[in-house]
Length: 102
Image 1 (tube, rainbow, N blue to C red):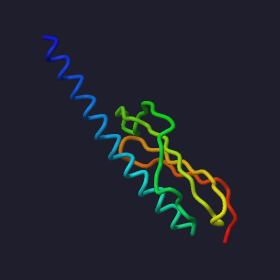
Image 2 (cartoon, helix red, strand yellow):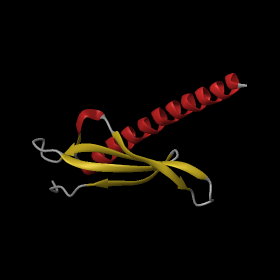
Image 3 (cartoon, helix red, strand yellow):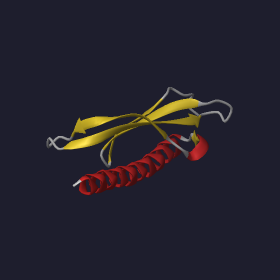
Image 4 (cartoon, rainbow, N blue to C red):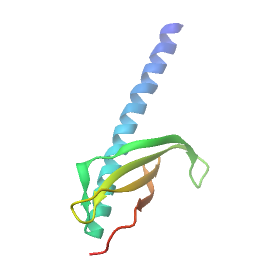
């Protein structure tokens, strides 16, 4: 009996890891594209998760809501922050700190 429980927990952990990696890759692409649209430098080519919680889609289905932070530069000499909020595989929002327009 405990083998089945252990196998179920292991399967859930593997699913969570793969789902997290897929969401992270989508967040990196989203951050890069947002910076390209605004003529900014996407720094370090990475994002990091700062918040993980549950959320509901419009149809009521439960999903994981992840908030990722990243850094960008508008002048090449500074760092500013941005955030990407994802609900499951869908990007909900992208926010950039105020920056100098070029």
